[in-house]
Length: 71
Image 1 (cartoon, helix red, strand yellow):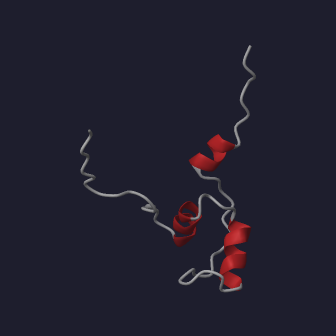
Image 2 (image 1 turned 45 degrees about the vertical axis):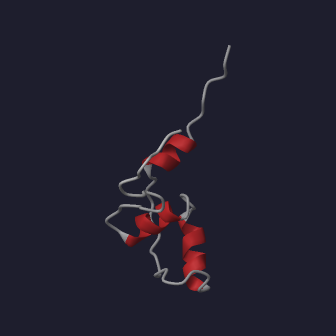
């Protein structure tokens, strides 16, 4: 039997300096146009109006990276 005590849960603990990147990480790296639509139509409580960000985060970039096939 394993008894584990978690010191600090990290689920949904996104750390970012800007609101846009924080909400992008909280919603599982959803695109910014979807975040803007959710804010415009008030689908999420507390979601501020976000400006379009033209950059990609490292996790999104790694997810779009093409892998070579296995031999």
